[in-house]
Length: 260
Ligand SMILES: NC(=O)c1ccc[n+]([C@@H]2O[C@H](COP(=O)([O-])OP(=O)(O)OC[C@H]3O[C@@H](n4cnc5c(N)ncnc54)[C@H](O)[C@@H]3O)[C@@H](O)[C@H]2O)c1
Image (cartoon, rainbow, N blue to C red):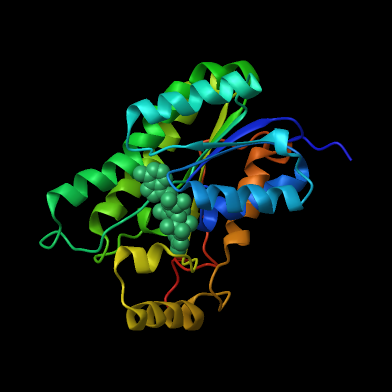
């Protein structure tokens, strides 16, 4: 069956692990042309193999080593995509990270690094992709978080970066909507990936956070990377043809504004 994503060129940043990898794997059966970008080449190869196992042919998968904090890497990502596939339909700004800390604890180098990867990179990469997105009447998905809506004191710069990213979604949607390009944000709740140990949370703290989610979130379970990937696929497809400028929670109801 022909799907609306077949043959469409889609860039996913941070595609070597976690949610980015799950998005690539979930999209593979719909036969797009995937551009998998990340710093870790080994992780990218794992993602590539998983996509091939699901029937996406090797010539429809491009892996590009890319540190999104480096402008020349972002330019190279766009140039390589155009050289190989000739167009850009989708841009999934997924790469992101955090360090742990409230305002008093935050080192300003970490603040700058988080803003650079979580906010400046989606801004600059979207800007570089704009002419191609206009040509293809494509779409952008920004990977935000529930903490954009309800800040987390243990992740202050991260919460701020995601709040600003949501506003970037609104502004970009307004700017390029007239060209037929849609821009939306996906805001996950707690999805167990390597991000939590990488942030520096102890095993005990992670277990505590997971238990809180499982006992208080309306759906009473943790999210899975596939829960997020399914929403990304929907937003990229024609099924979402009249949806733009939205920040959509995929959090099991975690920040549902009801006293429990
Ligand atoms: N896991 C969650 O609970 C959760 C919740 C809300 C939002 N998110 C967001 O989802 C996205 C993916 O997170 P994840 O949970 O899969 O984490 P992860 O650490 O498993 O994956 C993050 C990905 O981003 C990449 N990345 C980080 N810095 C990069 C850089 N400078 N250049 C290129 N790639 C870089 C990593 O290499 C990795 O591929 C992030 O934007 C994160 O903020 C995650």
